[in-house]
Image (tube, rainbow, N blue to C red; front, side, top):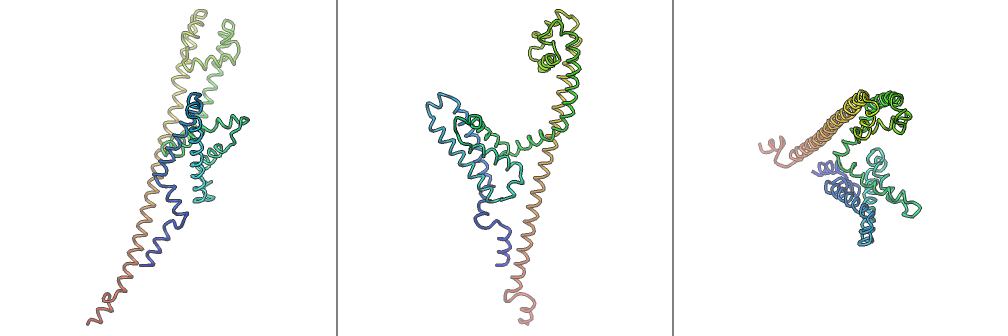
Length: 288
């Protein structure tokens, strides 16, 4: 029985490191960290309000320092538990860098770095699994989007050259150069004041200008831009499926380890039962 107990304990985290690992990986701890991240983001937002600073400036500073302390303690525990393996996880490195920004000296000469403290809110990405899946999908979509971006740039260049030659003479502020034309076409692509602000004034001088702008909008706004959405949706589907598969593999591994542990315990119990007096073949011969 002692052997079985030792086998069981060997498979569990032992000592202080084991207890810290159990604590830092607990669901309650994760939820607490998420709550601190959200509250700290709210505090940093309130710090930008003169009224809030006048009413509770010292309290906001205290809450910010408490949040930073909690983040530092969390990272320290992870470093103790995982050691060098901590830096093999990209999300851990991300958290480490974000918390590092929090430790930047708060002096007037480092106003930009002080403003970067709000980046702590990005830790929600690493803390919430579903958000990690979304970010993973966006990163995986970048190679596919590069081809769409190249196509979009080609269409923009062709359209900018045509617009400069067609409308540059009469509408120099909008289409005087290729750069101005590209910027105006970008505004049209976003559908911001494209009709009343740009196209209709151009059509007063060039009545058939719609034959240029309408196809441009159909191609760029409704076709090419939708390709971005299609690529991202496809990558999100793949990332979600991969995440579910990884979760299933982890569950299978847990079940396998539990089954092995149960088998060892059963084997130890059987051995102990065979050694008990009054049981087994030797005991039967003694009774005869």
